[in-house]
View: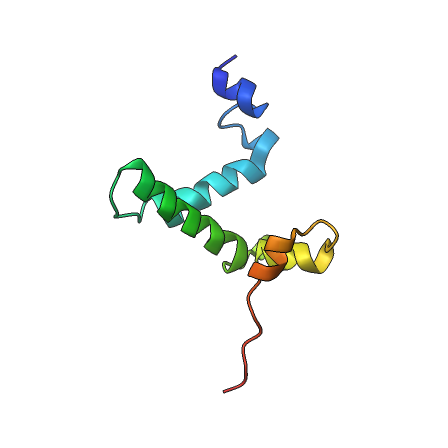
Length: 97
């Protein structure tokens, strides 16, 4: 068994066991790592990745969540589990123009 398997509990590249994780890896690869053109030092990469994670969780809609962001879904379906931080970071309603 590999160290990675011990840390994550599931075999790598085994969509039958961890399809959600494999899909998330694909999304992150396609929408962040393959298009990132910033500096490759740890502080720059960390800042860019934190920004991407915020976008992924609060702005980017997910087909699996009926086109809601994960934060919107969490607030709508499981308000008791949503952290105060998530509640305050949810997108404001857009006003009519």
